[in-house]
Length: 310
Image 1: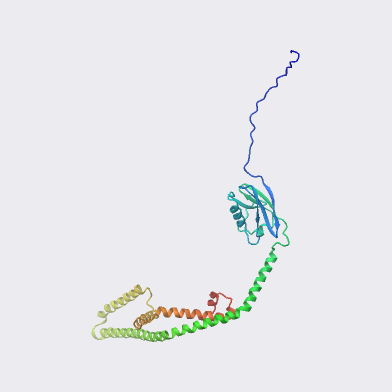
Image 2: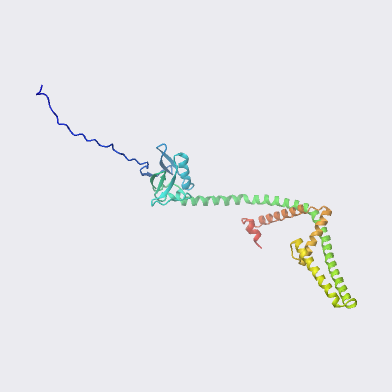
């Protein structure tokens, strides 16, 4: 019994503290290869919420960087922040087109994950700038061909409509023009009579002052009278400015008298001045459109440029 017993030396036990593991929430950067499928660039991005790869078909000529970011956030609500950077780390504007972005390699920053994206060589079937220019030229040629085929008929139809409208406006304005001419003659007569009345009154005033100065009284007596007459005239001119907010200029005063008698007569004859002005403005607009339609050099010009020409 004693011979079978074995004694093993006791090994020392070392108590070690628990190992501390440091973890980072930042996803490691990875390279994403941009590939062309069916002639369109396709970007495969791993979404942070679902941890799965999602394909985004890009339209280089129609999409911008902002559209790509919007699609990422709409596909995965977990994408709180996303931006596109150059290889040097400079931020790319959201208004930059995808076609310009694909010229060089770039980086896609989603939340805290950085994806290095390599832009491959464009396939022959992809849309190029030269192809786009050719398409635009073709559209322009089709537009010119359509105008050459259909524009003459449209011009004839539009000219017929304008002529019919012009004839109708002239018929509506014909009786109003007669009444307006009669009112204008009456207003001109009354305004001229008012001016001649003013001349006659000033002449009578001058004659009366001369008679009183040389035959009745002396200049020593009439001098204060002429002073107060001049002062009263100044008060009258200033009162005219206060009431009309205009300087007392003879042509403007005559025009004001003309308008006064014209509107007075229009009210008496029940002449609708507002309707007459609207018809005249519409007539002028139709005549301008007809003149523009008949002039091939002004056909493609805007209305502002035509009106500014002498």
